[in-house]
Image (cartoon, rainbow, N blue to C red; front, side, top):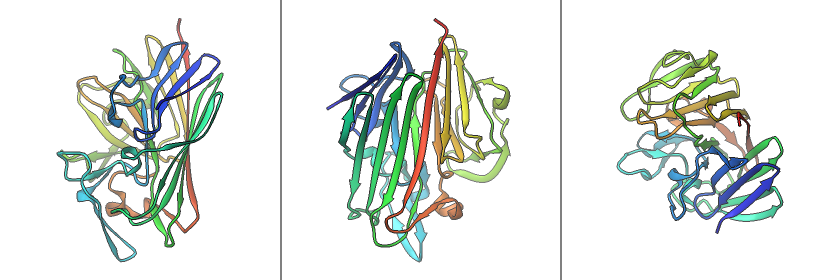
Length: 284
C-alpha cells in the first residue's frame, strides 16, 4: 500500500511494504529522483531505499566481531556477497503519517543470520524547500552491535548532467566491486570537485572523506543534496546511463573486514542517525 506526501510543489510516494522505499520524489511534477514503475516490487527499481544495518557489500557475507563469526547469506544473485543490509528486503510499516511527513519502521527481532535485534526508522518530511529523510537505527539486542547506515537514492540521469562534490580520495575496486586496498585521488574518474560530466566507464566506487554536499546540474535544473552522519559518498553511475546514485553512507564497502574501526559500535539501546536533505531548482 503506497503512501503519498505533499508540501507546496513537492510530492513523494512511499511503499513501506517494499523494503521501506521511496517510489518517487517530484518538484512541480518533474522527477528529482527517478520514479518506480507501477506494479514493480523490487527495491532496486525504487527512487530510494534504506541501507540498514550495514552499507554496500560484505565479502562472502562473513566477518568476525567480538570473537564471533557472523555468516550472512548472499542476497543479490548471482553475487556471492551480502549487500545493502537487511531492511531493503523487509516489509516496513507506517507508524505515523500526517500532511507532508511520516515515520515508517522496521522492527527486526534478531532471530535471523544478523544476530542483533534492531529498530530502524525512516522519518520523511517534505517542505517548500525540499525533502529530508532521517534514518535512525537503534540496537535492541543485549550486546554491542556493529552498525552502518546509509541511503541509496536514484537521481534522475539526463544526458549532459554534471556532478559536483568534494572528497578526500576514492577507493579503487576489483571486478566484484570490493575495495582492492588501493586508493586514488578524488579526481581519478573526473574532476568532480569543480563539476564534471560522468565518465563513459561505470563508476561504482566509494569516495571517502566526503564533504557532505553534492549537486547535479542538467537541462531541467539543479539538484542539491546535503547529509549529516555520512562521512562517505558511494557513487553508482553505470556506463549504460541507466542510473545515477549518490549514496550517503556511514562506512566504506566491506568495512567489517577491511576497516572495522569505521563501523559504529552501538551499545544496547543506543542509536545511529543519518539525515539526507534534497532540494532542487527548475529552469522552467
